Length: 161
Image 1 (tube, rainbow, N blue to C red):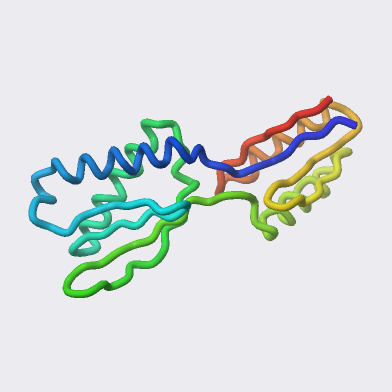
Image 2 (image 1 turned 135 degrees about the vertical axis):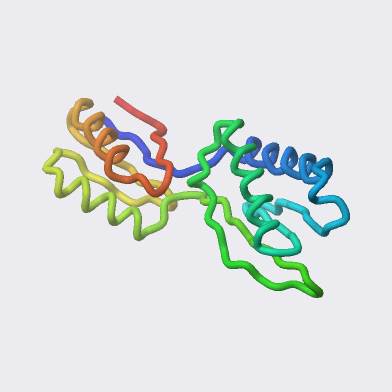
């Protein structure tokens, strides 16, 4: 029975390179001289540190530009709230999305069921396995998901005929 997996997974290497390039640019830009502006990455969390919200917005803009140049979709970024640190510093933690949450998986299942396509979707860990009798039905399901699910970048993996 033909099937494929729907996943939401960023290229970790490209994300790390984008963060490193952002850190280099922060070090060389004149408007960041003498300020605590910094960016660091630990596993799936990117931390932006700056003097004010305006500076955090500038750092985030640089990061988004670097990620776009490396063909990493910026929809992988899940920005948190601004937090105060000691003194006049502020920070923001941005999480890199990994996997499909259960709520989104159920939304996709409902979408496929309502579309009257002859496919079945099953949530497995952090991915969604879609199977059907015909390859054409699976391709139609892919097109439907690309069209209707726009808030996160979906990719399709493990297509079996």
